[in-house]
Length: 259
Image (tube, rainbow, N blue to C red; front, top):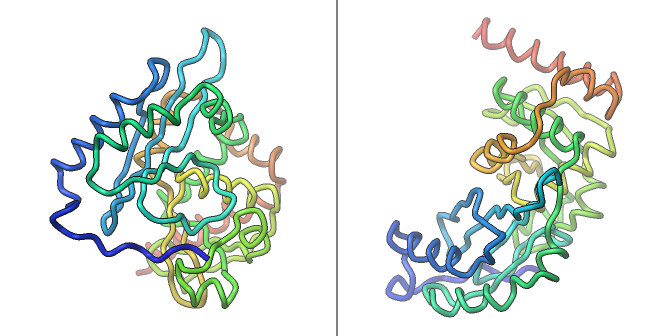
């Protein structure tokens, strides 16, 4: 079971712009010379922060990335793909030293990942659907949904067993289309575990998966272009999968016109 969120002493750590700057400086000072911050975001209600790191590669090699989480409580996702650093909120010197100790070549190799062409077209699809007010959702088991984040969600078991749905971004009760595509769902779980997607709980045990735009957009800027997106998606996931997306976009556009 994941630990409950800590109630912070406001005199110990306040999530202000100044504290964020101090934490960012601590992270940057601790990074090896071949690693830099591509994107980062901060939790609003806790001392957690997430950092998308990019590892410099030799000329011609595909870029490598690493998701770093700095927090004072356990992540509720099991089998996530990120390096987690525990800190005493507000102790910037200690977290800087911890990062220096942890970010060894072996650790960087273990936790870093590359994104394939299929990953790139999948991320582009997620952003394309969002532009049409469409997102992906999964229906959680009653136990996990009721526990909120005090019951771990296993991204290699629970997530893959959950019902996958494509639905309206602003109203989760509208236009819920079941989609069965195991390879796509597996990638969604992987992106969720890398903080490329973030979640929101909603009614009917649904978990909304929204793109972390401030991460995905910088990623796509340093990754190769992917022309003929629809053709590549069909090759990766099948023509039926593409038809579902095209039809969902058509229906969404029709709703906008008639509303």
